[in-house]
Image 1 (cartoon, rainbow, N blue to C red):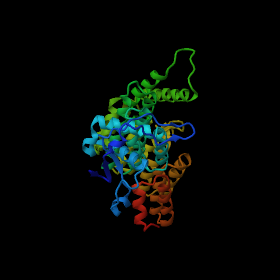
Image 2 (image 1 turned 90 degrees about the vertical axis):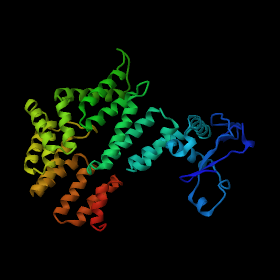
Image 3 (image 1 turned 30 degrees about the vertical axis):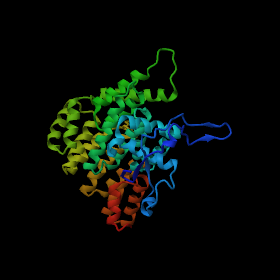
Image 4 (image 1 turned 180 degrees about the vertical axis):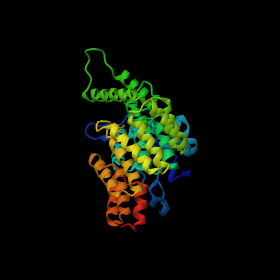
Amino acid sequence: MNTKNRLVFLQVPESLGGRLVSAEHDHESGHDHGEAFTIDPGIPIPVELPGETEAAGKNPLEDLSWEMILAGMLRVLAAPADYGEAQSPGRIGYYRRFILAVKPEIPQEFTGAAVLKAKNGDYTGALEILDMLRGLTPHAPRVLLNRALALEARAASLEREAGAEYAGINAEATGAYEELLALEPPFPDGFFNAGFFYMKGRDYELARDCFSRYLSLVRLPAGAASSAATIEKQARAEALLKEIERNNLDDGMFRDAYDKVREGREEEGLEQIRDFLERHPSVWNGWFLLGWALRRLERWEDGANAFRQALKLAGDTSTDPAGASNVCDIRNELAICLMETGDLAGARKELETALGEEPENIKIISNLGVLALRRDRRDEAAGFFRTVLEIEPEDPLARQYLASLGGA
């Protein structure tokens, strides 16, 4: 018997060979709900043992349950490379069929649990479940989409730190979307959501390609009717394509400038941003990027002026990848510059205006906490950071600030 990460691989008795397995048996009809499946005694079964079983030195067969068997199989499917021989294609396929025979509704149940965890900010738990589902149904479009969305949200929660963890998770999210876009047949919603992901990363060329591909996939012949949801998505994709084209955001210079600033080469990026603005002076995105570079260089006054120009040009109707107002992002950045110049009242006005439009934007709430600290209002600051953690329980900056306040 081999052990690995609280798993044991048990040999099935020969006497069980050939029996059909199902955890759901309808006693009235005499039928199993699961798909017909034959046990192979030659294939060991992974079982996840509860901690108390190991601690007490119990025989793992004493309290063996379907839940322990399915949990063990799902853990192997999530990371087969961690379990030696268990990663062989034949073994993996056997475990998949076994699980779906015993509990055919598990994909729906796990999807619901993962979505709920992600909504509650438990991205670690959501991704653990989605990795299991990905192992169970490796090419299921909705599973791959939910995983990409969870990784994207996890990266967004770390974005303010802009450290190695953020870079790693964002790279995983990029890989998840690439996997989604490579599906055959193509999955329209994958292209739609990937378009927003790339827009958020200022890769407008890829965003343009994704939205164009989405529209080509959902466009129906004349006279055919689309669902209301599809019609709404088509309208959003078309509007964003027009915005990209109208503002020349697919200009390679813009993307290159953004990458330079993001990578810490602000001075190099500034040259390209200014070149872009000379050709496209009315594009708010260019002024925002200019302000971002200047803010990172701690040129607070210049950064504030660039953000004011971006705010003037953006108007109230411009929308970001999440469908919320870009104006909130501009106001948030402007507030940071104003704080550093000592204009605390002006910073508070910008943040409160932005919060009115996006009441659950953790960047804005967190900066209101920072502003409260600047004004030596520790209890008020702690309240803002607690609010951040209610929305985003894994937010590291809010935890750090609360710890520095003594958990006040």
